[in-house]
Image (cartoon, rainbow, N blue to C red):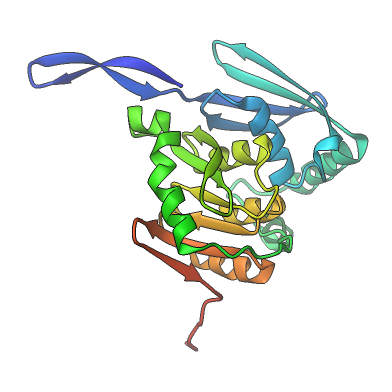
Length: 253
């Protein structure tokens, strides 16, 4: 989704495509939970994927209804979930009460920030499949090609054929949208146009995805938790090359 702005280069003024971004508020059973800056498209997928990848719901059946309300200030996404899921949200909100304004403080905060990882069945990804998926990724990055300002997350079959893709200004949002749209069924893999951070690995595992391929680098925490979970983690996926990562070897200090 793009709009246009006027851009001046030298003595020339012309219209320029820019990616849409706005505040998206997620409400569960009438209670505000989070406000994300996102591309306001595929928001039902976003709400579903966020709910699954953040452990708010255990499965899609616990999401009863999603309503989207657009206004000048942004978008409100109202999600109705099962009672068990809503109780989980309320417990998390109580744990947040009383924390200092500096961010994540104390043992409980750290435990909540780095949550237990869901184990997955690793998926082997062939060099040919990576090559096929990489060569077709730009075809699914319409906003990215037009604006240079969005990420894409794509679901590829075992042979590398991309069958599903979602874009967003945020890489986490793009992956959430992809998960919400149904990624994770079958022996395929996710290809992302960004680095593989802890959050991206955690979200992939929460969706039961067995392989994550990134065009950029992974972080140290992403490598370690991917190994713990059984996730196949591949970085620097470019035409003709890629790197598969395992648990980091740390030398004594």
